[in-house]
Length: 298
Image (tube, rainbow, N blue to C red; front, side, top):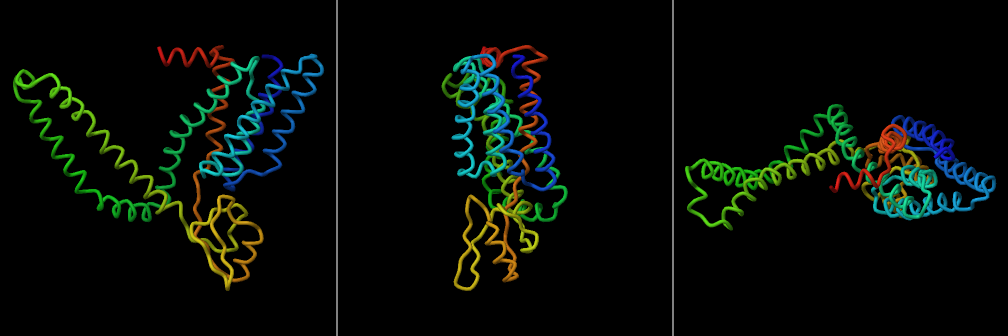
């Protein structure tokens, strides 16, 4: 593991700087993500020559390639912004593996941490966004709740009926086991259904009320995601997964046209959390990810 110390320190410093950039500017500079990829692979190449072991470089390259394809899938699926995708590629070249099997498990483990911790982080960060833009959020939330209140009310009435029935003495003695099973499933399932309906409405209200904003052309940045196409004269500026280009921003400024922009929750802090937890597992718990997976499954 000692051969990875430099890579771990390098990645930690780079991810901290990327986190600060993302929180401050909502973007990560290309020089930061590209330099992480280059430094990680160059270090692996030189260390492989020093050790006379080509596999140390090969496994780093394989990690980079695996996350390269995943990053592109996440990018074109609009799960990740460009900076997130490039940072994932760089960390793919850093994550250790002494064999193909070990590398695969470590890559999957990091992805698991990234999305598991990322979900909690995103939810927590969303509370701050809602707090800052509460009036817009409240308007959208109440509007969406109005559309589903009848369905929620029906579920609530059914659930109250189940509670009343469950309270009756010797209820289960008079019904078959199969009906009793369906009853129990419904009893526990309805609260989850209501919870996920409200959670879905919360995120939709967050998106439409807080994260979609009309912005002055002078406040736009390259890569901003356009929510609607804009017509300038005979030319259309189309929304794209790549976001606005410098040329398109110049056109908007020249025409003095505002743009409806979809903002995202800065996700790079989730990379930092996932990387720190991975280091904690390696160096403090002194465990391997496969042991964690076996523990969770057992």
